[in-house]
Length: 152
Image 1 (tube, rainbow, N blue to C red):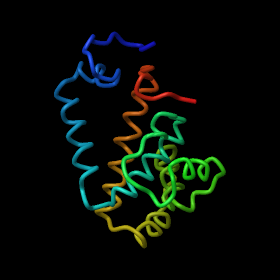
Image 2: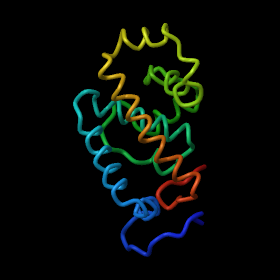
Image 3: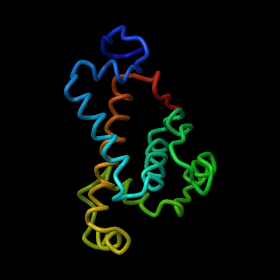
Image 4: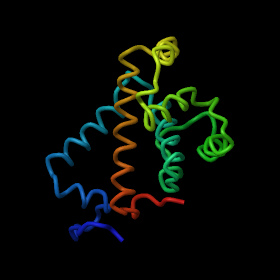
């Protein structure tokens, strides 16, 4: 049961209802999501892999089941790889975990390893995408807005 009172707006998820308390921010969050997702700085395929990895890290069953782009491997196969600790399909996985949990431990060497693969512009978009997706999920988890996501 949600931990805050929600509007009775029909057709909106509990997250959307909660965000309605801050309508300007809701519009900005939606616009930011749209802008980053549709940007060509980082491929949608990589953004989808990051989204799925974050869903796996957060245990969000619904988010793991959603598909926004075709991947070389099925979503379920990718999640199974993550569950087995195989992050080879997402070389950024270790960075994402450290970025979320202990960003102060990210070293210059770690950034240089990313720089060998991604431009500074791409790294910034990757970080923005991680923050947006992970932040929304943390809102859902902390306020128990699970009609949108289910935690296993």
